[in-house]
Length: 176
Image (cartoon, rainbow, N blue to C red; front, side):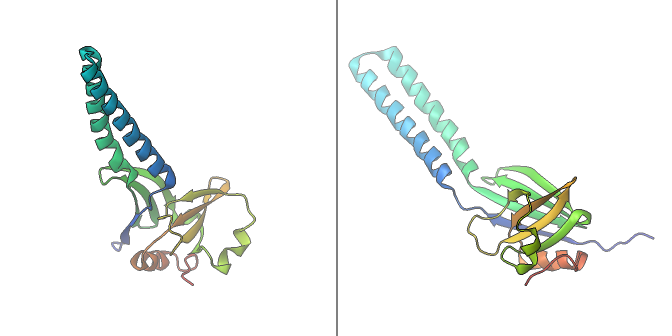
């Protein structure tokens, strides 16, 4: 007999902009301003072919910047369906890419990142994935198996997702 009861929950978390993102945006803007000024200088000096090329480069640069800048706005979407948790990256509200899928059969523990329940995992070598907002608040750590290795995942589930996950695996999900 099939179990018609299924558990589903999703959560969206906006990632804080990083310093690297601000630096790249600043460099793009600086390059566009420099090319724009050079185009005007060449235009007034009488070099028409060069000024037209520079103006075309500025126009292409603005259109590329218009498509690149939204990609610096990253959101993480967590989707929990029947014991599988997907971590999707949403770039600028336009592009979605699955970054990881975990199965609760391979789960060791989910607990707040500062919980004493994670003490036994502190000195272990693990690959770390950060799917959080980078603000440091409400972080949870998920320890699970990936082949023969353990991995740690930082994420920020909401109360509904925590309840849904706890109902699926109440001995492995902690909210203390």
